[in-house]
Figure (cartoon, rainbow, N blue to C red):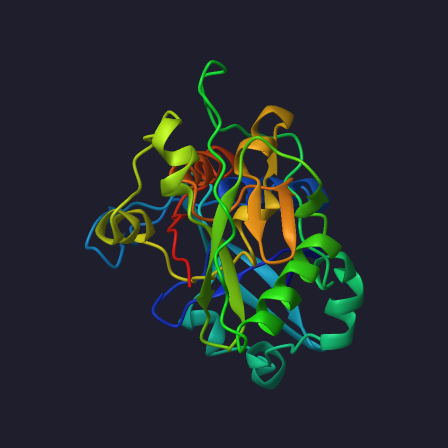
Length: 297
């Protein structure tokens, strides 16, 4: 709205009987057209919760909107609350409701182009943080043979190994003191997730990262009071965390195609949930209405 020649932002409030502005907006208008003639008023307002509000004063201003010009009363309130268009103005000014109620639909191509780095097939990488699996250096390494794989599963396992190697999650090695057999887990889309059977190897000798995992009720409690919700699902979440060099050898897996060493945090390590939860909560710490919940499938 243009008030005394000054453009100001105002919210439409059909529940408000009077139009109001705050003290800061009053100063902006006054600087543009000189001090406004602010008069005392006996008008008393109440909030929607019933609290009483005593205006600082009342004045008359020239209001312009879409070639309409009117001289209308305006209440000034203390503080820095929102400027409101109440019913007394709405009775005199015809607003362009079609424009006001229109929801601008973003162009999908524009969004994809603007954030093209987020819409790639490449595996994400968490920078500045590494995952460490604590194993006493004096621990005797454990080497397990590869398990036999059903012929019908081999193509899917090999496809997943190729994906992991292509994205740098694993790399082939000829020798290793540690070796863990893999367990293929079928996913709902028909593909497989490869998990090392680390309960036979590193999980027996490593120190558990016992960072507490929240219950669903605790996550709901953090979200209480929010109005708009967005779910961010991290693809191959654990694999986005880089392993420190000392931890890579101990999580080497043994497959029907040979040995592979992990460069990223693998599934099946007992400390992985605690490591990931701690990292995500540290990254998102201080952001209200935000919860982190680990769900693997």
